Length: 321
Image 1 (cartoon, rainbow, N blue to C red):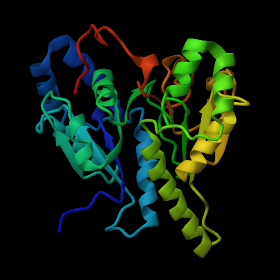
Image 2: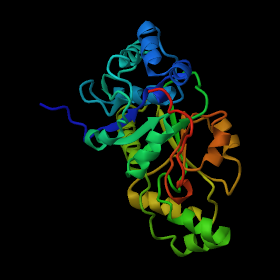
Image 3: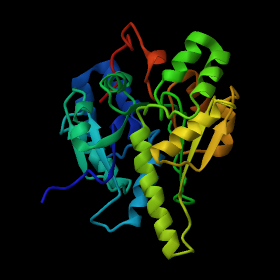
Image 4: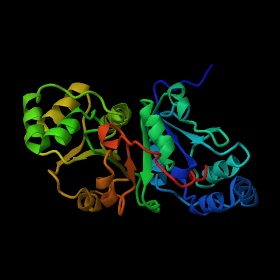
C-alpha cells in the first residue's frame, strides 16, 4: 500500500534552511562545483551545524508523538539541489541530529520545488532566494529563510509559530489598497469590508495544517488533564483598529483560530519578537524582517505586488545546493 500524505502536514526543507552551510557555500562560490563535490565527499562524516530553520523543524516533528508511530501527523521531506552523492552528508547529518526525516529528493543543481504538489506540501523553506521566488510565482507556498542560525535550546518541546497576516495568511488585496491609497483609504476599505473574509494567502493551508495539530492536542488534553499544550500560534501584524476586525473575521470564516494576535499599527515587530520568542516568523515584507531576523528565525514570503521584481534577484552566483 502506498504511503499516504493527504492527511498529514507536509513540509519541504532545503538543506540550506535546515543546516548552516556557510562553509560549504564559500567553497561552491569561490572554487566551483567540482571543488564543492570533493569537499562534501572529504567531509561526509562531519555533521552539519544547525541552520536557521532547525529549531522549528525539530519541534514540529516532535509533535508526532501525539499519534501512532506508523501514522505521523507531520512529514518533513528534504528538497535539495545536491546530487544524490553529495546529499549523503545531508542525510548523515539528519541522522546524527536525531531528526526523524527519511524522505528526500536530490536534483543535481536543479530546483526541486515543482514536486511540491505531488507531495501535498503546504510549505517549502530554503535559503535559495531564486528558488523561493520561482515557487511563489508558480502559486506554491514557499519562504526564504533569513538571519543567522540560532542554536536550538532543549529545555522543552514547545513550538511557537508567528505569522504576519496580509500577503502571508491572506492575499494582498488590502495591501495594494494601502500602497496606492494610503493609510486612511486602507482603513476605510477594511471597515467597508469588515464582514467579508479575505482570499487565502500562500500560507493559509499551512496554518490549517498547524491548527489540525492543535485540535489533536486538545483531544489529548481532554483525555489527560495533565497534558501540557506545546504548540502556540500568533499573528503579528501592522494592522490596528479598525482594520483588526476583518482579520479576525477571516480566520473565523476559514474555520481557523490562533492563540494570540498583535495588532501593532506600525510598532517595530522586532521588539515584540524579543519577548514573544517564536521559533519561526513569516512575513511578506523584508523591511519588517530586517528587524525580526536579528533575534528570531525569520522567513520572507515573496508574495504579491509589493514583492514583484523587474530584474534578476541576485547578480552573484547562486548559493550552494
